Image (cartoon, rainbow, N blue to C red; front, side):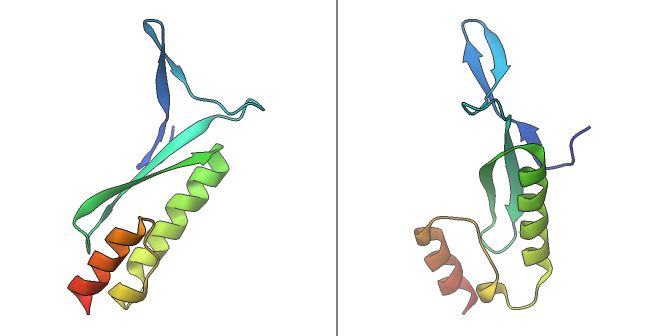
Length: 88
């Protein structure tokens, strides 16, 4: 059972859904979390389950840290600028 927020990344192969892998055979997972500052869902991919769990843990830890504009936000530069502008 996968933790909440982590799902396997899927693609179509003909009519079937298959899980995405990298050339060495490692499975790719999608990590989705809600950012309360941006009021948007953030999505990142990670190669391997351990990397996905680490990414999810880092983001959840950053959400609990005080100082909303100084926390780590895994989004593009444009959204980082928007978050800074809204929380300054």
